[in-house]
Length: 82
Image (cartoon, rainbow, N blue to C red):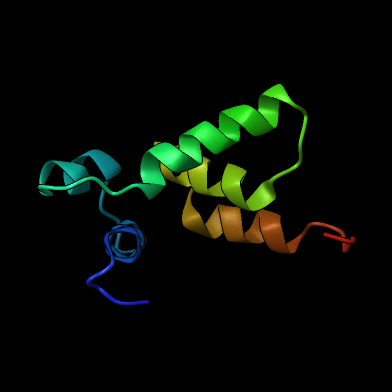
């Protein structure tokens, strides 16, 4: 939870309305959460594993889902044993 963290600072910038490509273009290093979210989302789909947090993060990173909509979808999920 520090702006020194590449993943945290990227998420903060996304929350401020910046686009992923713009954020990444201005960085010199790798933000490992971006490719990791994509890889995990693909694996979850391939093996039919429900991973709602990873799926939401992946869609937010790809720009196909807003942070607000992702939060709403996650909070609207029925309770279960996870």
